[in-house]
Image (cartoon, rainbow, N blue to C red; front, top):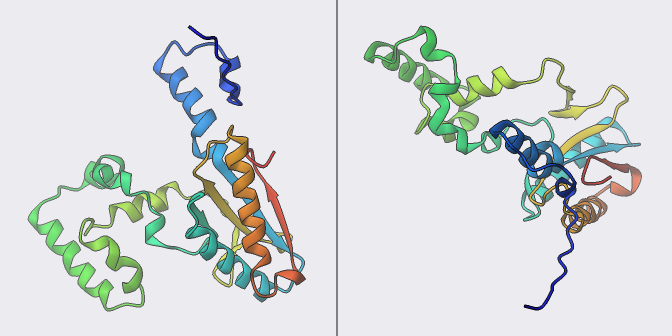
Amino acid sequence: SIPTLRVSTDLRSFMPPPQTPDQKLLLEQIGSGPGSRLLLIAIEGAPEAQLAALSRGLADALGHDANFEQVINGAFDPAQLDSALLPYRYLLAPTLDHQALDASYLGAQLQQRVEDLASPAAALLKPLLARDPTLETLALAKRWSPPKAPEMRDGVWFSTEGAALLLADTRGAGFDPTAQRVASDVIKREFRALPGAHAARLVLSGPGYF
């Protein structure tokens, strides 16, 4: 057979082969888990209202780009909830630890959802109700929210220094330099195309950017 040379940038190749399920999971997450794929974005140097508008514009532009799984800036969107968790919502949520899912409880929950649909939150809740009438996915999201989340101003995240903050989850693995370079270039290009971007500064960080 003809010898071949395969070039890889996966740093996991330098680690010992995993021997246990925990070690296998660790190596998978190091290479392709959310922590390795996240790009941290800050927009600074302009008035707060303008930074918030730029944050929303950039999140919308990147959210439609194939290089990203999702982009979040603090604004709640039910589509950001991982649909893969939905079949396991009652296993993960604490509801059934203290509450039977009987006719009485389900009836009360459905009545509450009717009231919710008449509230300002209807547009946010409606996409969830058909498959999750007791809103377990929202309970999980609340339970997993960090205790010290970034400050919300004008509907988006801001740092204590006054920069608008975003998180971009790339489709490419953290150790894929080509995919990470393309994702970084897309962020810069889409930012420059936003109205008023010339008056602000874009700052990128994260494992893929490094």
